[in-house]
Length: 285
Image (spheres, helix red, strand yellow):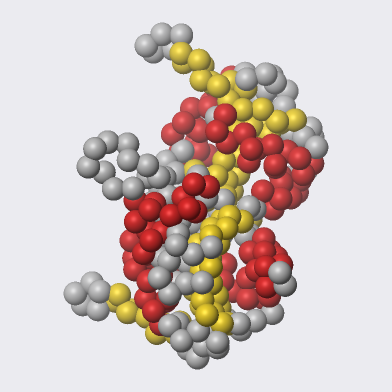
């Protein structure tokens, strides 16, 4: 097996290659004057692991090019972050099911697909090849443990993220709850844990994606007012658009970290071990 990656997944690919003990193939990326993308990878073997986060449209095209470049080998695709996956249904007439369109396109030339903490597991059904979710919940829990917080409270931003939060909390046997928004009037809204008081607690809010961070910033301010000692945020996919990191730190969060599914300076948690472990286990099935 050899590993290739697209331009925005180079660090994670190198980490997975090291974990698996297989070669990472050098890949060249360029852009033509008209904007078209070009890539060329080095020598491949009869089995290729392609690692590519779909963080923007360019990375989607690079993924298609990488798959085609490896057309003489048996290919496995790892999608650490799958863009367009949140449009997993038709919300209004005339809309595409974007997750389905992307999944169909990425199924050609691939034997198996892995996706890290997909927003909705039903998206995996749109691939025409076997598709499996890999969770990095244990890695997030390990990071929270490294913070050395005394009796932390793990919070999901809403009920829909409670499974992720519960998995993180289980690593250290910590308390877990989810935030609830209560509207008292057109202008007065309160965001607070459903059952566990945040007063006097170090709080860690965990979610699969942090995008603009607007709701999270509001929640952090309210948790401060409710007496939380410190507030931290940890997510799988740190999209962090529109100044989200600055917004969150300005709102009083002591730390904001993500994994390397979306590579940035906040990527202090790695998905490499979870990917390598799953690849190795499935190879022995």
